[in-house]
Length: 425
Image 1: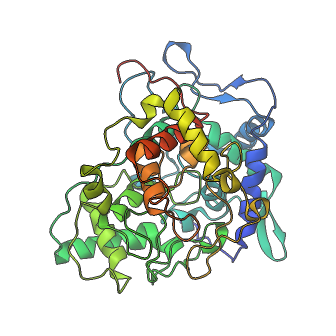
Image 2: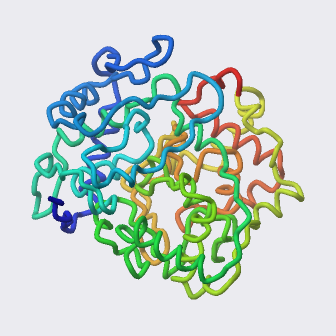
């Protein structure tokens, strides 16, 4: 008998944001590293549990009988190219078998995981996973994750990251933007279908960012009707390029906010979603799809594309970047370590157009946390074009290629998760 669809009550954005902060605090010193029960090839552990929260989360995972449906067989290769991004097991939605979670760590954000625990059928349409609402408690009539929910997510975020953090590796590479298919009725119909399945729960049927899950997230889902975007390659005040939307759909926003990556969708399907999203906005609808963006044109006439800013991250280039970081006051928003700050910590009143609150600045110390990606090109786009209303463009302050490349190199050097590239890459 099919379980009834979970009904999701409204929730304060700050509720799950506070829980995500608990998860972050749990990543400090804890128990000695504990290998998970399954090791990789050659005896290398695919998961290390090095915090109290993750160790407790493993026990909760077992107690809740999660392993009756979820296996932990997937693991990153010891070397070679990136593992392909697994698609959701939609063919298993009517079975007791759930997707393998061996590579779940950092694939999605803490807030996504918490929302999924509370209302799985709302987050993944058609899911038969039972809700774990007993791990939440009511607070002022709204669900608040308890300590066990936070610990369980800490365990999920540790899975598969000991040998290689494949999601961090993926975010360090700018997604390729495929050539778009013809804008015909069939593509529009496909976009409608995909939007209803994957986007509507958060962004709403009308594209206004008011889906049934919207209240769970500290960063509100994008309002496509207003068409105000943060991660783009066009000057402030201008709508995004089609390629910007395609990249956001492909890459998601990592662990920095709630949107998952949809790189497992076929290229044509991602373009179908771009077309559907554009139709919500009067400023974007009715125009043919284009793969090239303003940044591509700019890079061809003097940007840092292909110059390899990361190669100088430990030398004079990064040293000059540190000087620019200090002189431009980057630490006043991102903190001395680059790990980001809350509005209260920074004494800032960040908004993202039309009064939408930006709760904290970006964490630059882990590739998975960088919401627009951690590639050189993503970082340079942010410097050149700004990030919504919260971060201005630094094009005037960094007019020369050398200065931009130095600052990018320094930012890349802050990534505490960066490891030497495996052999054979």
